[in-house]
Each structure stands twice: as C-alpha cells, then as structure tokens.
Image 1 (cartoon, rainbow, N blue to C red):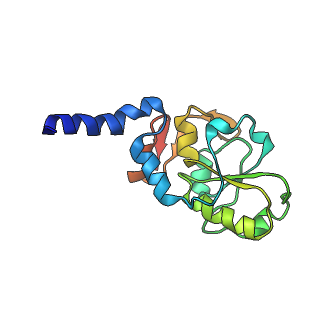
Image 2: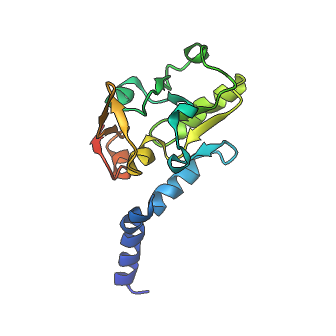
Length: 163
C-alpha cells in the first residue's frame, strides 16, 4: 500500500467514521477501558431517562458544566455509599462519567452494596453528546460538555468543549 493510500485510510478511519457514530479509535479506547462483564447501555437504547436512577460519577466541577437531565451527582474521588442511601436498590441505575471508566468503578461498588440493576452509560457523556442527546446545566439545555482534560476533548465531536 502506498503512503498516500495508507494516510487516506487512516484519516478516513479517524475522521470519516464519525458520520456513522463513534470513530473506530474511540470504540477501541472504550473496549480497552471497560470490563466486558459489566453491563452497559448505549444512548440509542435509552428511550426514557426516567426509567433509571441517573448518577453522575464525575467531579463536581464537571457536573456543574453539564449533566444528563435529573442526574444526581455522586462524584468519584469523594464517593461514598451514604451518597446513594436513599436510592431504591431494585430500580435500575444508570451511571456515567466522561467516557465510562470512573462510572464503571462506582457501578461495581453499587453492585457489591446490593443494587440489582446497574448499567454504565456506554461512551459516557461524550458519546451521549456526540449522539445529539441533550445535556443540562442549571435546569436548562446547554451545548457545554466538560471533557475531563484538553487531551480527552478530541473525543467530543458535538458541543462546546470545556476542560
């Protein structure tokens, strides 16, 4: 394969596949981050967020920029089971963070604490926003999405990047 064709193929895979959802590199990243035995739900599988107890496992500053509608902030570094003591252990929980690594960790703690149906939001808030789903701040829709850091901001293709 000529260098030109190889460069074209790489550019197509990185940039071109965004038209078909997540890019191949982003899918590969997520595959490397996730425990394949922990259940995930993709944004396109969610018809109604009110079917879940929605938890945000990012840090407070990230949550304040934007979050899923009616999401409860539980944090990551400061997370304790006391934070979720009022939740129903039998009702499904949807937990998310930027891409899904921190939320999976908190999700496993919830499972150990007796929560029956815990799901990690596949791709986190970045995939949610990239799919054109609404995020909120102060009860109103916003285009801002905290991307955790500048290097992680490359994965956000829709919305205003904040880091």
